Length: 272
Image (cartoon, rainbow, N blue to C red; front, side, top):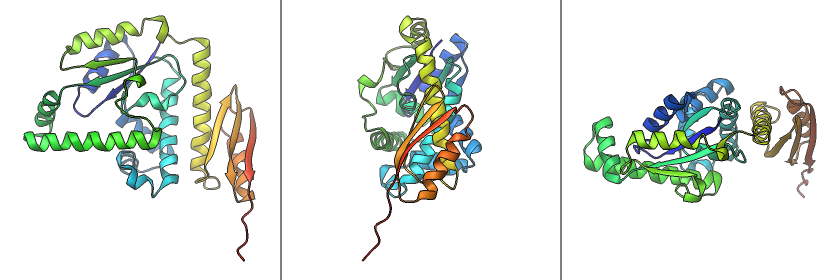
């Protein structure tokens, strides 16, 4: 069983491919939009705020670094819960970057020629050629900036993907069959090791999300790593109560057996 992460550019046909693949292999299909909505409900963030924030360019995020980290944590935690079942088709912007280190993730990028995309945008949004072109260029520019800022990679780097499909050149049915066939290959089948890595990532994501949600620990920049129920947390804080609360909050997360807090307390230097 595999996790299929389809990265789709605006009006490139990625959603249609995801739905086709999901139907062919019998996997549930989860969109970026549905995952954002679920994250909003789970963690009490207004859906429109979370969606808007996750699409805004770096100039916005540089003003609210803490919010950015919290929102990304919520989105990853929700995706991990779905991905633990292995068989999943997820379509959205570089979803595989939210699941690092999982070998049974099949990373697919869908592209299409500009004329193909403009025709699709014009048909769906009822816009003329200039408006459709401007919309696509703006969306591509903002998404490229978003990925670069959050993950420090280039969205269109071919090394980030196992398969790149151009739907201007390949039919939807052929692309669907190709992706489905790849899921049958040993390279993308779940193994005990990759399932363990997925479980560890999911637990670490749940702890990170709870730390971001709890008012005692929200806003603190920490790194969480989980291994077989043992959670190690590293970072720094200038407040001893926060350091103590980090251990308490993490310990209460379902699945945590032990918390190893390596958060350093750095006292504030009084002004002279």
